[in-house]
Length: 286
Ligand SMILES: N[C@@H](CCC(=O)N[C@@H](CS)C(=O)NCC(=O)O)C(=O)O
Image (tube, rainbow, N blue to C red; front, top):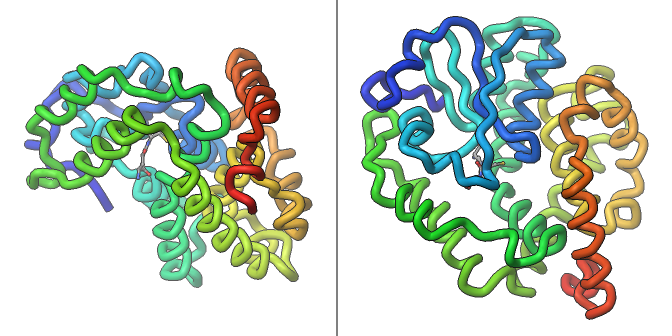
């Protein structure tokens, strides 16, 4: 559980905030996960949008709340939590119903959340490779420099996560998404979703009749992957009714809806990829 120490929090005004506050961005998958959990649990929360397209997450103000410069971040009565899976676990423990991490399966669920987190950069790779033109995927070098030079600590220690983020963005700026990266990311998702499909073979949701946090996190990845051209229906036919059942919930669908400009950009990007033999299926061979 990544709960920041008081001395990590340089934007000290948040220490006095009461209630539940979420820093988030509409199109961020980790933010979507957290908003869905807040909705399903009926928790009242204050919204603090941070625009990733304007690199607001690298402002000194936001780095003073989340030294990793990532979304989401949760403030609850002055305590700051980062890492979306830690945030949803915290919310589930603090706001009892409906229970999204049933106690009987807690260890396995935490393991699955870990697996999902490890695939996060693969999701980014495929999103940037197949939904957006390259010129829209980068971060301003000055913003990356701001992250690199910020002296923020996480739980009192210099944080190693920053290096991973910086390497990702700098490599992306240098060579875009390479075919090898796309192939490897696609294969990892194929493996992960094959295992989700097995677990769902004879039940409506991954832990029985009720939706759990694991359904939510895999649903969000499935939803994003579908938009990249990953052949979800062909590879995982057993997941279609599970996916549609989750998508039909009003507390969920509203959090994953794409804005019209993004849909237009994605449509044009994928038309161009079709004309140049560079679609998801052509590149990954999956
Ligand atoms: N492991 C982190 C990943 C967070 C993450 O990568 N968030 C993305 C949005 S989904 C972000 O803030 N990206 C902005 C950036 O890297 O500049 C979590 O689960 O919270």
